[in-house]
Image 1 (cartoon, rainbow, N blue to C red):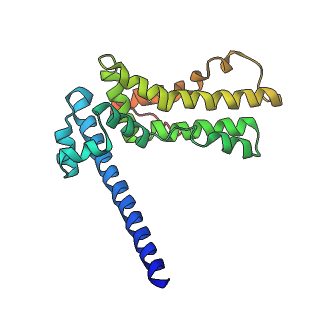
Image 2: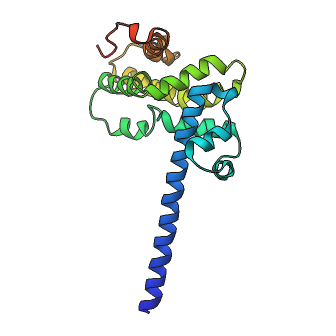
Image 3: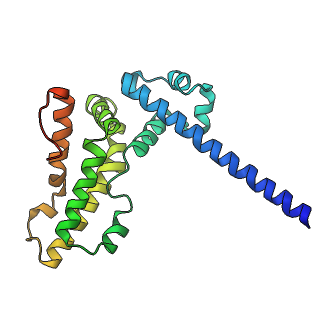
Length: 201
């Protein structure tokens, strides 16, 4: 009986070790893929180069990502944890006002998009190449924009219901709440260090 339990424990440890190794390898691939996309753009990015950056065989990439488009999607998902991630459960348990909740949402969006150097690099790539590769913007829209808009609309509706916010067209166009952050990113991408602007303020 003791031998059986030990064997079962050894097998469990082996499986856990395998999962951990797989997770580490996937992170290595995504980190290398980001560097490749950021350096060369989507069109010129090569899986051979990703493999070299990750110090693995090219075939290993295909074990995790069948196509370059799927790899790009995973990079976007990994770099930009959308501000609406787990936001519904957070909003439901939030004890403050709708105004405070909105401030929290905008702060999350700012941290994820404006101050995140890698997120800005992905946005630069999208601006440059989504015209040629519309699937890139489709990924960003699905993974980042749509969930963010849903979260913003939820907060606005909550504020209207509580009487904190007036009923107005902002709920129809919650994208407007993200406009300052988008402008800030564009400002940084164009002017870089010359952008003498206190974004935190």
